[in-house]
Length: 552
Ligand code: J2J
Image 1 (cartoon, rainbow, N blue to C red):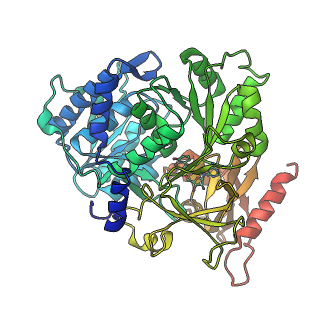
Image 2: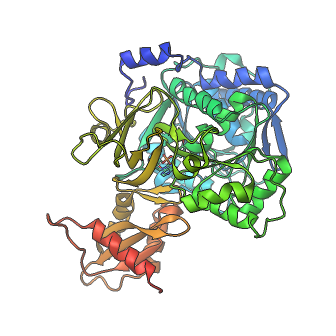
Image 3: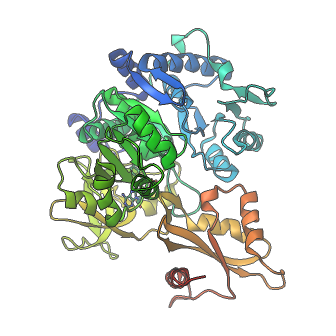
């Protein structure tokens, strides 16, 4: 494997191959094969555009040729990809797979702090982004490229405005689509090696990079497509950015492409956009995070979209954060479809409720693992196995769960057990039927409606402010997002008044993704301490939960 990646021990790799999980297929070959089988069928629908499998395959070939010839990209080259839900996101991904380059996926919400970190951590050779979307992503990419320690990475704009003259140092994607296809640029990467990098939600400091291999990822995709009963007639809508692990692989666009179905790209998650698309495109399967699902429920249930014909919709998938059972119970009566809960993680393990599960299981649990070879351990604080049915931290290893983050030995020593189990940080209990119920978490992370925030990443930025003596960021309960972030700050003596708007402006100026900007700031003279003198986050959480519950 690529240096910095942790391979599975050979005996496990052999077992996973023998069981037929790891088949040796690569992501580049995956599209080639599906294009052969489903050539004329619609692969992608977005606004006015409709691409067949053959179109997508040809576009991937032409762009692969251009990326290799004109930007000299090739096997092993990391490329940061930050694209919204437009068809180019697939064209770019498959073009990179074809030449053996590795996409490093950034979310559209990421800003210079995150994009810069991804570029630096991987030594990216190019940044592919898009103009538009209400933010100057191309400007950010240029800034990041200029700051690169090594050779300056290329900056590619997938959506330059037609009227604008190209910006200095920016290559429009259209210029990189070669008219001819040069098969000599196609690579044959090792299917056991990293194919791309996903981003971890992160618990400490900067987000960690998750190397996923062709073998492990495509296994999770095929198995997910089976579990979700996908067929060539599946029409899938993702309300999330498709580069996130959930809409990419659970079963996501790759699962849909595995089965020959169609992917409909929603430009935004609003009920007005998505419920209209479900009606217009006869969507059969949709994926959302809990707050988005709740908005759809309200809009369809006597709200602004209540007249929509949603009869094509068979399944709504909800995951990324805990879906409250009360909301879960509304899905079938309001939307006229089945709910599927999805509890997954970019590191690997994914759990689904199944089509054959009874209603109580579907509304009350977060499903069970994909694979018979997903190994789960539920342990107490002392590391000992919890009693059956009792909650504890979930540890897991298996055929599509990584054995280590990229280039992070010190962090890996904490995040993985010595025998290779990933410590999820999620507190779960197992029902007698083998389903998991997520009860909470032990990791220091805020889950803001599915978007993950590492408190100490934000604290580090706050501490850079000259008026801040100390900072602690904690979760506060929120009826809509589940959690929001509250920053407690202690001002530095004599530094003048510390105002919330000034602090938030400061954080934005440091290029932090907007979902990480604290929703609330409390300026306090001191923090409560634990018995050993550490900041008591538990007391801060309790205090803000209490304050949030009182009318302002
Ligand atoms: C409670 N917590 C959940 C759920 C994720 C499919 C679906 C989701 C993700 C994802 C994903 C949850 N109930 N249903 O990658 O393939 C929290 C847990 C988990 C963390 C992972 C997929 N579904 N979570 O959300 O890497 O805390 O992946 O460990 O973004 O989200 O976050 P992420």
